[in-house]
Image (tube, helix red, strand yellow):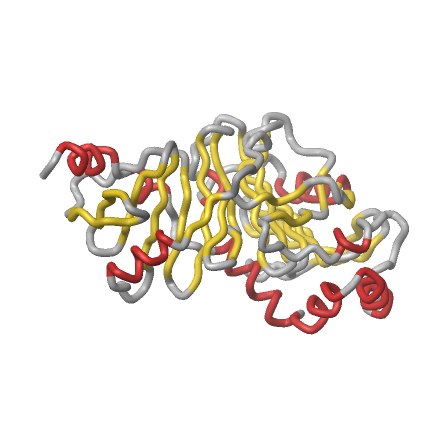
Amino acid sequence: MNDTEQLIKDALGQLAERTPHPGPTLNALRRKRKRQRNNIFLIATAGMAAVVVLIFAGVIASDRYAPPNANDAAAALTPGGTGSLKYQPHWLPDGFAEALRAAHDGSTARVWVPADASPEAPHADGPRIQLASGQSYEGGTSQWQDTTVRGLKARVQVNGGTAVVEWKAQDTLFVQVQDVGDPRETAMRVADSVRADSDTNFQAPFTWKGKSADEFSGSSPSDWRAKATVAEIEVGVTSRTPNYSGAPTTPVTARGKQGVVVDGRVVAVQEGSLWITAISYGATKPVDELVAAVNAVEIASNFDTGWIRKK
């Protein structure tokens, strides 16, 4: 084993521990897309068509939510990796900071956690607040109760330490509060503070075969990870130095550099200050397929990380 391979092997580890399977966030984003494909397609065709579809869908139900302009309202993530996140809460409990942004086929999600929480906090148990748009909440076992959000018909459910408020403005939205004080009271207050916001964008740090990264999270502007998942392969780009110590590794060439195969299901290679990975979920993919996935990543020339853990 040469010095470079040993350095890579010694460095690789925490990424595997910090990389949850693409779970609730992306699954929820995709479910709603299947039921709204025709509407989203029409909205995306043109500014005027978007307005027509919104009117006939009864979306412009209240002037309490001024909609983004036509292009922003239709914002599906572009190949360049930028799309409007559409909505912003104007009240959060003290100490919470944004830790995750996600966008997939016209649906969006944003997550806030305590500013000093671990990098895994957006996906883990513990205090967190999520605002999602373009999708209905699918989860929980409690019955829904009727309520209102700023005069709009809404519903709320509470399951232990988790509360969800769902309502419809220009889009279907929900706020989920987990392990934060009185969850129902907090969820209602966050929901009441939500306003349309066409200025806050999702900027993907990379594209892969024309698909933009659909999730971007971190613990600071210099400690972040972005990922995209297709056909049981998760491609990621991270500023963190991964660590797979103890796992079986073999050298591999990817992107013209020496990388490593970890446990037969991960290919990782360093490029400048970033690490690029491909992880096989479900049935193990051939190493050549994982290498090809890593090779297909195109890093964006400019993207913003200043929002990460910003209060």
